[in-house]
Every structure is written in structure tokens, then in C-alpha cells.
Length: 458
Image (cartoon, rainbow, N blue to C red):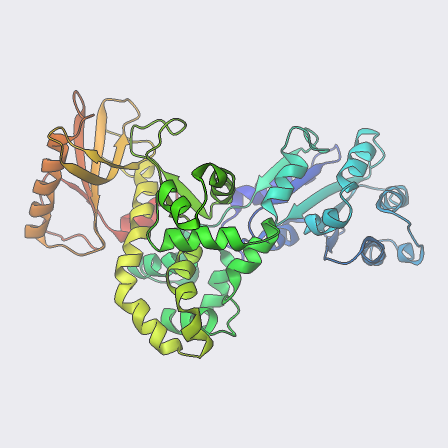
């Protein structure tokens, strides 16, 4: 499957067409389509090698055999190390060729000196006939190889491309489904292209979840373990934290208390999981992200959220094959679960939606005490780009009628009147719903699933 990726394709194609040889790093979470992208972009005379967990001599031999498809007889020589292989390849070429090593971290785990070898050869201009593309799913290791200031290849890469998950707009196109169905699907599969391919092999969402996720033989039944294996030695702590967050522990103090550890011991793992976009840290609108202690942790990735909310806690039942029984439990809570991801999608869409003449930057939630001391939560708050207006929005995963919209607007007015930061601002009110009615003419900007899908295209 190849959907979107126009910008990534353009950057890679331009880089590989330059006169000077290029050192390119491509990284991102497993199953996001990195290998598919590279195979699409790489010139026909490139050498593409998918690394594995074998010892170095076996990997060197395997890569030299792969090079033999371009240079006959290259694999007949035994190369004692990576440096000799790279130098021999460079000398054997009469024109520039691209060598792409996929899953590069597998090699580095057994040969931590390899990035330094590449640095020395690159700085010494000993690889002038090679474009070198290094790709990997271990985001932590790839960042350590190319982005950390003390890493061997720091400052030498002409392109460093992070392949992120796709958005809900592209999922709706791929599955050819209407907006509301796309929101439901996205709340399970997220933006991971490989999950979409797996989903498409089944006739329905329910069939796909039962067969591929709930069934203990399903290809995604143990998916978090595979994802954690790319990034950490043991997944015990990560599993524990995500299961607690899925169970309703969102504050650092709650998570630390349940784990029986000081909160200070969790800052590193929480930062690590946030960096991988498995979880996110929410702070109230207007708070300083660096200094505030008013933080909530939520699971960011939809598939991980679905897994830890519904699968992990029902593992015993699923081991006995009680798939239908577990799905019945999921179905009762599914709309409530989807509403949480719908809220996130609505916040992300705010910069791309039109609110009259006003345009807004990143949206957040706000929770706290109003001027009269009442505790209040507001789903969406955003400041305008000119800092003159304030967007205040409510998110509902429902289809309210005209009368209900009026009630929601009145409730929103009550919250706005007590907000401690609204003075001197023009207030713009918005409501996000599953399907908006045709006959509403009130003071709210109303957006529905179709509007959000279109906004996510931008």
C-alpha cells in the first residue's frame, strides 16, 4: 500500500538527484511504510539490503551477495569487516550508486562501532561513489545515531526524515468509507498503514478486530510487545504505565502510587514514551508546559489505547477463545472510547478550520476552577493568531438536534462566563458533533465528522 507521502517522496528524490553523494537517515515507528517508501523512491540500480539479527560476518556475506546483483562476482570475496566491504564497493563502481541499509539498528546492536566507521570513511571522502541511506524502526537508536550532538554521524546527514503515522483523511480514502466510519476505524487502527492493510482483508471492522486482534493467533494480538522490543530491553515498566493510564490513572502521582515508586523515578520513562508518541502529556490551556505540575497523561496512539483499554485486561478470556464475549464487552463501551479520540482529532483540526475572519493556533483542553470556584472542564480552547480572539469549543460524539444545540450553547456560555482568562478577548464558540443538523442558525460554529476529515487533509 502506498498512500500520501508526497513530501517524503519529493525530499528523497531531490536528495538522491544531487551531484554530491548523500548520507540520508530515514526512521520511524514500525509498520509506518518506511521500506515501501524507499523501494518506491530508490533508483533501479540501487542496492537495498534488509538487515536482521545475525552476527556481523553473516550479514556482511549476505550484503555482498546482494551487491553481486549489481556487480557480478562481488560476493565471491570474503570481507573481514564492514569497512573493507564499503571501500571495496566504492572502488568497484564507475558511477554513483545508492546503498540502502534497512533496519540499520540490527547491525549496530552487534557492531556499535559501525557509525564511527562510516563517519571516518565519509569525512575522508572514501565513499564518493555511494549515496548511503540508513533506515530503522528503533526511533531511539536512529536518533542516537544521527541527531544527538555526540553521535558519530551528527551534522553529516543531508536529510533526516521521520516517517510519521498517516492521518484519518487518508484512512477514509484507503478504505473508501464515509466520515463517521472513518473516525470509528481510526480510533482502533490509528495512522499505521500496515494495520490498514490488515484491516482491509476483512469484510467489516468487527470481523477485523475479532480475527486479527482479539484472537490469540491474530497477527496483531501481541503487537505492543513487538513495538516495545524495538525501543527497550524490557517492556515491563512500559506495559505497567500504559495499562494504568488506560485504567484511568492520568496523574503522575496516581501512576507512581500504583507502581509504589517515587514520582521522580518515572520522569525518564514517561518522557521516553512521550517521545515515541505512545503517550502524550496534557496541560491546561495557558499553562507553561515546562513549569506546570498540572499534567495529565493519556495514551496517544489509538491502537495502543485500544489494546490496553480492552485487550490486555481480557487476556485470560481471550486465551480461552472467548472472542465473542470480549467483543460484546467492547461494543458496550465503544462509543465512549471513540469519543475520546474524536476529541483529539477535533483539537488537531482547529488550525485548519475557518471561524469567520479568525484563525487559531494549537488547541488544548482546559480544566480548573472558575471565578466562583466551580470546577469546570472545556474540551477545546485556542488563542487566535492575532491574539485578539479566543475559541471555546465543546466536543460531542453524538447527533444533537436543534433544541439540544441550544442547550449546549447555554451550557457553554455558563462555562465561558467563569473562565479566568477570557477578559478582553472576543469569544468564538464552536461545537463538534458526529453529524450536524441542517436547520441550526444559532451563534455556534458547528463542525461534524466530514469537516474534520477534510481538515485533516491539510
